Image (cartoon, rainbow, N blue to C red; front, side, top):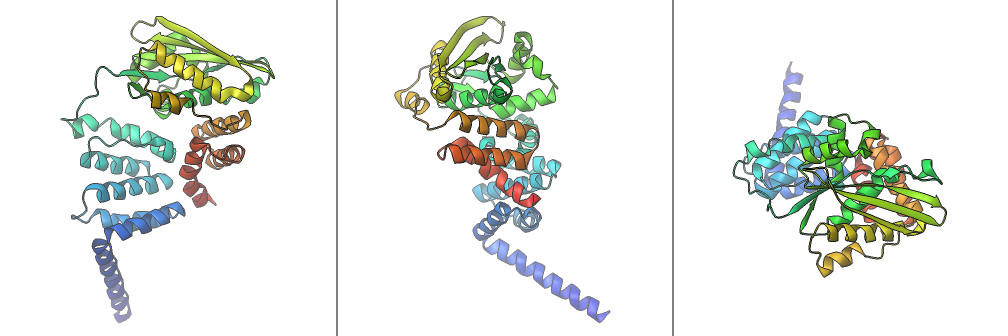
Length: 341
């Protein structure tokens, strides 16, 4: 019995010491938690930060960082209800908080969009977006290729993702994130064949609150000819606003979609500043092989095949070391892949 009491006393002392260290050095504790997270030690992150988050003196950015790490660690353990709860706590602290899903693990996607549904009730006085800013949803492209059709299938989703990235450089245009579109498609259980149907697309656009939709297809005719067709559709009426196309060699796919992005912006009557145009037309050293590996990774992520997705992104970075999108996804998946080993 005495031995039991002795162990209990030691445990109590350890907990008190841990709590005092956490309370005294929140910045140091957050750094330690970030290091643990990067190593895939999710359970330890949760244990350490639960104490920190309960500290009533923790406020502002420190509190947001703690809850975000708790959300990510909980997602890593597939405790998705807890992930959503922690994200709601962040919104209670900061109504305007936006989660950049391009650098977060895929398990955060659904939890974030579910948490975001409560933004109006959590933040009743939140400032509304400028009604003058147009919202565009870029839907997946149809693969109509004659050559290498199966090999190019990942481009259906990947081409849309690349256009979202380019068009997001334009301040006068709000572009719906690819992740939000995928979340909605999963939620309404839309069949892949319906992605390319104009009537279905208009329905998706309305659910997303988009003023306009961009949809289309791509065709590889031979090893020297790639064509990308795009249609701009007014969501409210379903009418065709404009059709555009770009053509060139498959190896120039990045330059082709950059050109298409600028044409789309012009058709939306959106002012594109010189710096924004320059960012879209930046000379990216990305081969078709790199683009295909990256877009294959996106598909694998959506299928929850995370180690395989990580390997695809790694292949993309090997082919194009400056490919920011692939490097961001690698960094997001690395802790999860480490935890699964």
